[in-house]
Length: 117
Length: 115
Image 1 (tube, rainbow over the protein chains, first blue to last red):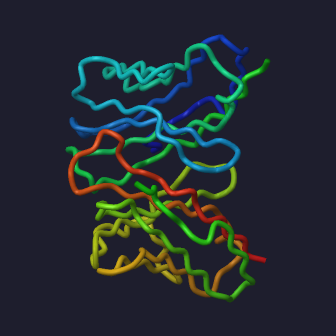
Image 2: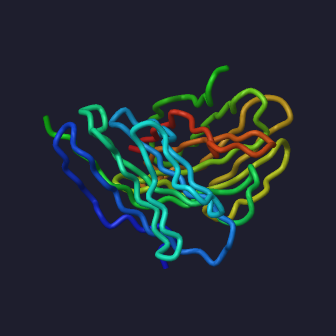
């Protein structure tokens, strides 16, 4: 079974509008972490935002926010006021188990976001 | 503080040759991870190392692939007798010993092309 599912292979949004990228996850651990990364066409992996399973509030980082619904096991990324530079592949990832710096990440298949002018 | 460094950025090999990919973690980071990204796919975990130890190699193919992180010098991912299916982007990530919100810091990747 997929541990991280991103159901949207591609998404389009108009510049300055908000967009939500979906991510659902599957784990039996009580302690876990969820990450979003951006991969532009240049190929590097850029960390965007993190949500811990015990964090009571949804994470926010500038124009990025994470809509964390624990009971539904979803961790959707919301990008507000989209910019042309937001066009990229976006990956959701999960770290399972209690926090330790030595925990592998499991990635979804990604969503290709295109921002139209 | 320099980020995670990987070299080479691009590597071309013919079938049957060996590929050596290097990763220098961020200063102060003692944990290194290797991931592989096949075309049009997400990253897949390969191996997790600490200095001189392999901690988790559950994602490594059983043959031809090996990894090390010596006491001195970069971490090396070695692929022997490469085949066309090894063509992919290989990412290295590092993390410090202590807890960090950002998780793992990724290098720019090495794009391996096998002819």
